Amino acid sequence: MKTLRYLMLTAATCMTMMHAHALSQNTEDYPNHPITIVVPFTPGGVTDITTRLIGQKLGEKLNQTVIIENKPGAGGNIAAAFVARAPANGYTLFLATIGTHAINQNLYKSMPYDSEKDFAPLSRLAVFPNLLVVPANSPYTTVNDLIAYGKANPGKLTFGSPGNGTSSHLSGELFKLMTGVNMVHVPYKGSSPATADLISGQTSLMFDAIPSATPNIKANRLRALAITSKTRNSSAPDVPTLDEAGVKGYEVMAWVGLVAPAGTPQAIVDKLYKAIADILTSKEVQEKLLSLGADAAPQTPTEFATYMKDEVKRWQKVIMEAKISINN
Image (tube, rainbow, N blue to C red):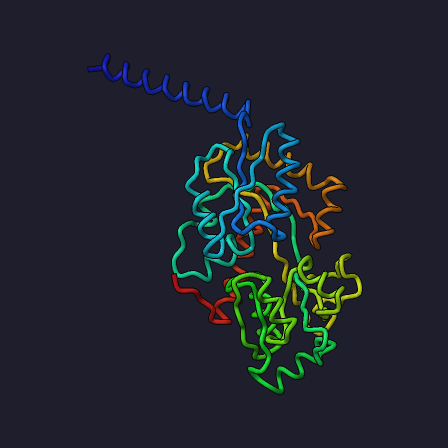
């Protein structure tokens, strides 16, 4: 009996050592085949463009092909759930956003993934402010004009967004809570139709991403009243912050980062973080991000984990106070 027990323990020990050796080999030669980054939105948007920029540079750093795969749907939940179930080997990564990892779990009644437990944070990549824009022929030339009209005419102002739960939508909800202005949200299926209706005057205002708003501002189709960042942005230096415009303490920054499935070996997490941090300190990458209205914003895996937890709490408060939910 003792001999059998000894043999079983010896076999178990050997298997553990073999597994550890195999894992060590897997991490030492990582990556030895292409890496896929899953993006939860359609191609062409600012998040997709940012991911392709970082993906290209990551491939160069790691001497390996990086594939960008777009999986839109359900506010990013479909793509996030797909990656959460992927093997934790560093070959399938996810472009986490303010929606997938801060807003959605407070917005949807049921979720196909746990944004904290199912992922290993790698690094935040960039932060993006929104612009508060109105039609070029709008009677509102300042934020105070907008607030004064909204308070005198409850429910008359409408604000469009690319969809429920987007940073554009939540920017508007926070504006309502902080100013006491009663505005009606009009969700669209994407930024393009929302912008088109704003230009034509079907809606009153919108919190739009800088890259999509800027061409319409330059073409005199839209007018920017304020920016949602804490400080002015080099892409729109003459546009005041909402804090400067009188909405004290207002700040909304959409953000994106990279995460891997939970359980990804620490050696792989460390290797990916180092490569990402090197990429984001590059002057070339920083300038390209600035052209998209974004700022490079790397964080260590630990810092990024804490940041996402804080963002969940922040948007939970806004969503509860605004009484927003999505049935699913």
